[in-house]
Image (tube, rainbow, N blue to C red; front, side):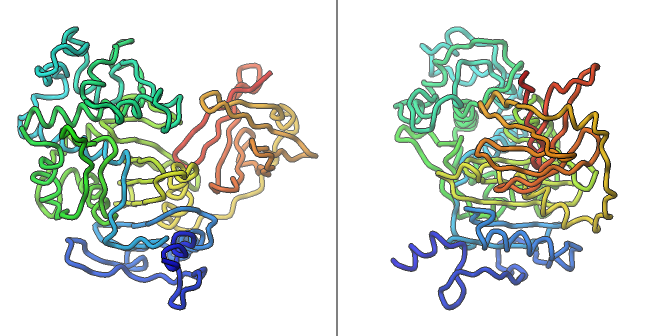
Length: 465
């Protein structure tokens, strides 16, 4: 019991039971699960940068991360666990479950069980007459559900996940999840605006069931997990039989990596086409703008980040608390993170910066030293002031001391900013690490916005005058 309590508060213990702060890389162990094994060195990955990443986790500079796995060129090259988690420990994925549910929809379309993404959703639920979606024949297509742009009255953002005014909480505590969603009002044209809606994913599970006569867990077992060699998983089931496809799946991190590699290779695993390449391409295309500068496909996000003055793209599955499957095609790379799933505010963002700040640089040759840049004092004088990110009701300030400018965060911290150009500066956030900011000016050279770029996220702050 004492050991369990100890392991829960320290990332890793050494063989004497004391916290481990020093890190020595070890090649992942070969087991009978379908993965080939290689090393950082053999795959041309800079071990120094990866060592810095893992050491930062061990020293709690990067907090609450439970696992980090890297697959390069089809080979597992990094596998690290923390806080008592191990290779065979299943981890709660939260909304990564949504991305996997989307794969099941694609398989059902490949098998002609579902006609296609243009099919109207009400056609799938004839047993739910008496609900608004069905009786009023909402003009909402399957694609609108997949892209979370159905146009229904759904609020999953304004209230905490302990508040029953939050629609996802109200649904989960309800007796009939499908009925709850199908009774929501349509308030705008579908396909026009992204609105994060976990209930829509529950409809995807219901569509799989009504089209294949298999609940989502059994459909996955037969057509996705079985072919991938995934046998150890758990999927939460509501008392009425409904599978919690929007957040109830638990997998081992090695199996999460199989999902990422399946998509990296266009739906193939070990020579077998499990889901069509067309579905993979459609799923990972940015159909609609999401938030923070990200695009959204069929339950998968798409983003880009600048690293060493080049821009790299990724698509990824993202779950509450910091559960991620990243795919970076340019490097033939899959990166998996699991993190503390609850009470972990920073964890939901942390891996979005780790990939561009550590993992992608480890794939690149050393960057040349940057020449110092002198910014015209006329520009420097325009930047100080207050800026607001309205979505989070968050303000920050830019202040000037001498010829340098600094950013103050909402907690009063002060971050020095170094110029990359006359309008772009870089600095380091205490919790998250490297970031850049861009000052956006109008034709009169007045600053209108400050764009904070952290990893794959791009947050636009309005200048307050």
